[in-house]
Amino acid sequence: MSEQRKAVVLISGGLDSLLAARVMQEQGIHVEGINFFTGFCVEGHTHAIRKRDQKKDKRNNALWVAEQLGIKLHIVDTVEEYKQVLINPKHGYGANLNPCLDCKVFMVRKAYEWIQAKGFDFIVTGEVIGQRPMSQRKETMPIVSGESGAEELLLRPLCAKNLPETLPERAGWVDREQLYGFSGRSRKPQMALAASLGIEDYAQPAGGCCFLTDESYAIKLKDLWRARGNRDYEMDDIMLLKVGRHLRPASHFKVIIAREEGEANFMQGYRKLYPHLKTLSHGGPFALVDGEIGDQDVELIARLVARYSQGRHADEVELSYTDLAGITRTLKVHPMQAHEIPKAWLI
Amino acid sequence: MVDLSRQIIDCRRLLCPMPVIRVQNAIELLPHGSLVEAICTDPGALNDIPAWSRINGHRVVETRTNDGEYIIVVEVVQDSGS
Image (cartoon, rainbow over all chains, first blue to last red; front, side, top):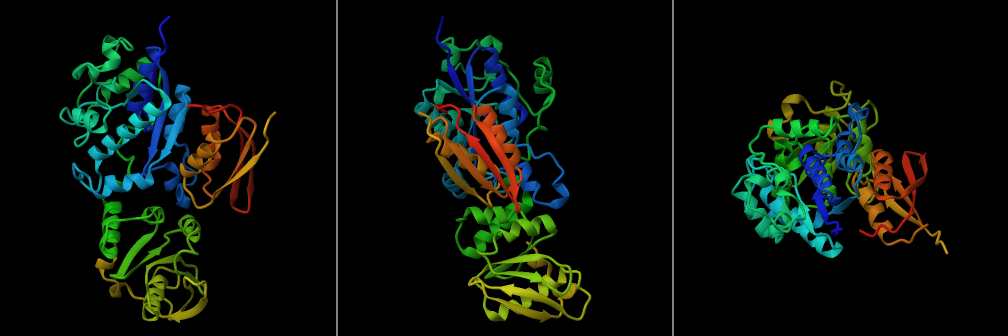
């Protein structure tokens, strides 16, 4: 009996990678999954910060897919390494700050390092030619396999018949005839394949899996870089870009105002890292201040936060302000009026 | 002899999947029978850590909520080689 070959599949949690893994299982390959966390992944839990979303399904799709397939899943923290992909993408950005092609090269390279360390034979992705305008085109397929170093150890079972033979096919580890030749943006072939394999439940077709494709998120990240004078970021920065209303009254600071209770609870976790305000006299939001502020800024910030409280029409709103040293003082301010808040402040 | 050491992992403020990654990385270094206690603030960890444990062959032995924190204890039941 021939040796069972081992493949690692890049599992995003979407249908394509689920199918790619399943097609390999059908051919008797030992399959394990790998999933890379960049810090920008859209997870159900990130949405679940907001109270109104807390009833929604909290499953992590990559874990769920692995469980459906009965395979192990290895989740890799690439937050630090990913900075270089995002900050200096060789192939540029898509519509927003999404460096999709560089991202794919990066992930396949990481998977290639992983299979070498773990003694696996090849890498599988759910890529389909023409599925993505930036990263999944006929011209980009050799770029991904070449620049990642994986070369012909990278197999794309869903579109393999449209591509040159890879080592797993040539060596007879997998049967090329049992692979597919999907191409284009239509999802119908994948849905038909899923139905033929008895797969009925899967995450909706890809698209919103990365915050960097989101215009409003990208605007906030560009603002952060501009304000700091460099394109670096920390994990806390990119997490806070996902929550609250962001306003920048001056270049040296911005104010993040919770839009509801769930966001306020989440933002409270950052209260030791940022100066913060809380409305005392009325129902109102929790707010963080990002930047180095002086005493002259505090009143303006307090008036701005008061504007978003239930006391917005009152003559006076009382708030607490706590600085980075943890010293809290109480302020009484007249809430800012709508016309006093320029649109340009809203990021 | 089974080593019943217990490692506590602080996952407060981390959003999933970071708590899962912290548990996974701790378990990789621990022998069969060890316990990993994850203290989380993201309620998603209540789903994700057990799901990760199931698919990777480990066992959740305790789950409790304490003052807004979610504590999940996982027992390493096999060497998670690959």
